[in-house]
Image 1 (tube, rainbow, N blue to C red):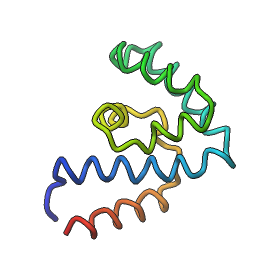
Image 2: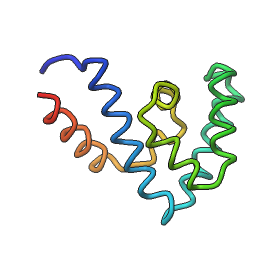
Image 3: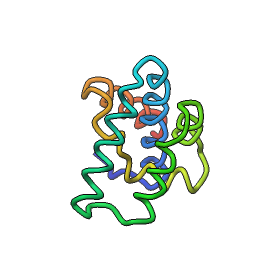
Image 4: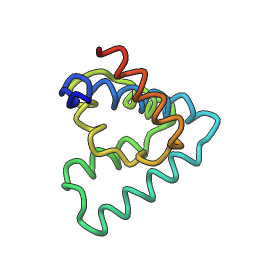
Length: 107
């Protein structure tokens, strides 16, 4: 198996977050879970302050604006997704299916 390239890692993050974004309207508890995860990271000092504040700002927005950030292909959103409090929002089967699709497209 070949190592994951930077471009593929970005594509994986975007694809995973696109699925989270798709679910947010029907599963608003995902935002509450992300807020709790972020709070835990902040309490433990597990995330640099600028990224923690950026995520806090995003998670304070209405769902449509959160969706826009999660699916934004731009550099800032890409960097933000690297430390996502939505980690764990997708079940393993869904996550692996998405990762497999991204890998196949990259080959």
